[in-house]
Length: 256
Image (cartoon, rainbow, N blue to C red; front, side, top):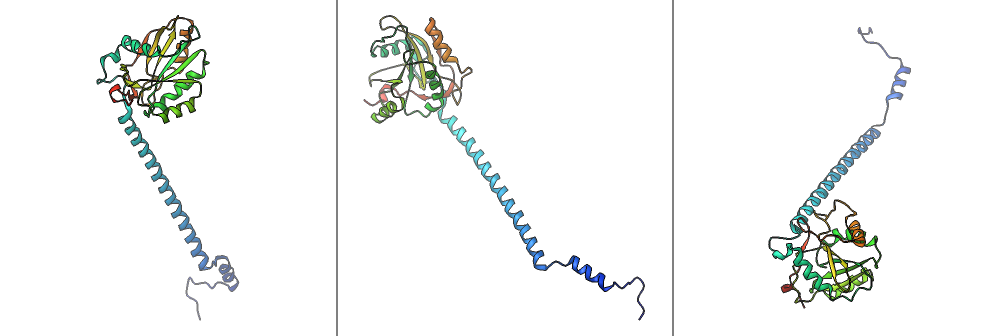
């Protein structure tokens, strides 16, 4: 029988070679395709979950920062605070009277750090690094550190304070009848002990301003104390700014 034009018969040997070269079991092809699809699908799901987690984390962080600023960011001296809170003379008179309750200093020209501390204030953590840095540069004899606490402080909070601070910081608790023109905490006052038991104010105000109580110069207070040791400084009042502060408990709201 004649073969049609364009049709050529392929030798049997060549047919066997072609079959041997191209033959792949159908089950293996399906398995390869299935595994590839599963790998791609799993990778896509992981990427989607990762993006979702990052988005949730960013959203939560932004919300937390907004909430923090709305709840804790306030002026060191607010409009509702007494006018005396902006007068360095009134603040000095009130704090000096409180310091008179301390035993007389045995060290001439000693510097006193009066740390305004409300244990119920969430902002204590953001100023703690400034306080720790300042205390680390001076011995107890050079810098006497005293925490001034409101009368509302509890026995448990006093015990925690003594356990955490040991002998490095003293605690001076106000009396319920004490009326001080203090506006906010955390804050500090730096005094120099003069002859007898007189105290000379050098600085009063905040550790820093902004949501994290940052300082333009990390060595600000260290240099200030060094200047006080070798001469007079100030008085300098630093209360015009906003940051992470809590209102100082008023005497009328403090517990005996």
